[in-house]
Length: 143
Length: 457
Ligand code: HEM
Ligand code: HEM
Ligand SMILES: [Fe+2]
Image (cartoon, rainbow over all chains, first blue to last red; front, side, top):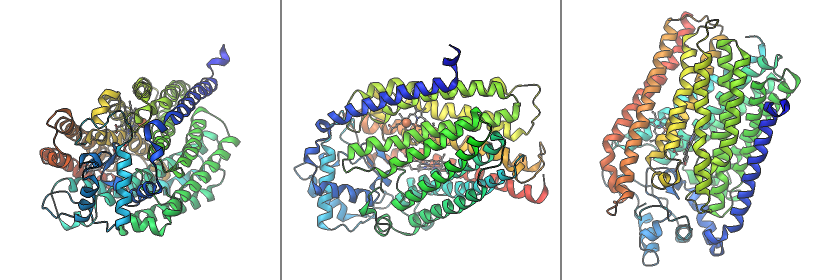
């Protein structure tokens, strides 16, 4: 009994138990994930879009699925919010080209000078993200 | 100082304090960008670049602070000199160069340019929150962590093995291994988000928490001189940390597109993540009122007693309030998260590093401590300015977050994000005023070291 209450053994056993639980849950999560993230739709264009998203540090002002900065709107659902297949692409493209708006005392977004291809890739990535099944978060379409 | 190699801690502490000041300065710039003050010295930098500096320097300087603390503690606890003091100094310069390069890159280049010239497209790891550093900087940081772990491991393994130094060793080896996750950025966004948390959550609520607990135990031991009771508490605190934090990671998995059972796992386990902080409060209050205590530096006692209380509030209570899945559904990704981030980071890691500096710096600099002396009065004033202003900053931003949720998410008449910002403006103003007070606190804190130099007070 004495040996069981030594810190070492308590630590090892709780580490082992919980790490195995985490790994088990992770394996299960990864097995069922394809039904949630629709990876069958992942194209090279979307993957390029993710890289463009990352290399312009969009996360430095916006959230995506709720993670990032809180200075600018949530973008995981921006494609839907701005019209989905009826105009989502058109809106986002026009938006990125119109920046910065220079409206006084309104927060400004920089001009990234993306090419047409880059814009299409970025929008494809945002469209794919909006289709992830994430327990219907955010609570409101507004983000 | 019992061992001359403990002196390697000094440059680490100095770098930590200097970077802390820069980090806070950029925090203030961020706060100013939230309110419509378009002065040139505020808008010379975009919000995202200032934020990169603010959050990444935070991580870097806390690591400097941990390294300094550990280099100081380990020889004493192992009862022998550091295995390789020269390596410690070399790694210091490497780490400082990496930090300065990163800082200048964020400051002077556009992020896309920085990504391009560091070859991000060949091995994309950039552009994810807290992991924005270029891939080669990450590699350098990993090497620094490896060298550091090696140096500490060799010292600990050759010396006396106690609870505190073994825990510190586990903490830094864990920190180093977990950092490998920084190099894994799969092209599937959901998978990438899932594993990114293995780094962030297991650092700040895992290995860093262990390091914090060990440093706190060391300082309390130095105050009370009673090792037995300190180790007994440490034993409980660490056990609770390990059992709650691993599945507590579920609180980051509610809305990123993984299985819904994480809402249960995360909620149930992370509720108990408050316990280690609760026990830390009990711990310091149980042991510190000892009559035989020899040690009497009032400033150190103030830091050491306040750290668990503030951590209980900032990490524990504020964490608990938004960790339940049904609450998090509304609070996720709003100013509420920001309020928790600030009070939690300040109360745990900032305060524990400053506690350790408060204890170790006078010894490293060979200064006599005068209770009530000018230098100590400055430190205590700085303590109150920083702690109280951070508390209020978090409070204002939490209120802003609650209003944001209410207007933007809770009702059918939800308004768009940008349009509601004006109704939160008063709170953003108050936060910035809090930020100014915090910065004054930092300046007074630094002044303390300068006057100690000239007057030996
Ligand atoms: C002058 C004092 C400070 C001010 C005015 C300030 C302001 C800010 C602002 C405006 C943001 C960006 C929030 C957003 O994305 O919209 C931020 C982020 C952050 N700051 Fe500070 N800050 C200050 C000090 C600190 C200190 C001392 C710490 C460390 C304890 C800290 C830790 C952080 C962290 C961790 C984030 C990222 C938050 C998150 O992603 O949830 N800040 N800060
Ligand atoms: C050990 C000290 C802690 C620190 C330094 C800390 C820091 C942070 C930071 C920086 C974030 C924001 C991550 C992001 O930018 O997305 C965060 C998120 C979170 N933390 Fe903590 N935390 C601590 C402890 C805790 C504890 C004990 C709990 C629970 C009881 C908790 C619950 C949460 C939750 C639920 C989130 C997710 C917020 C969201 O929905 O976006 N934290 N924490
Ligand atoms: Fe967490």
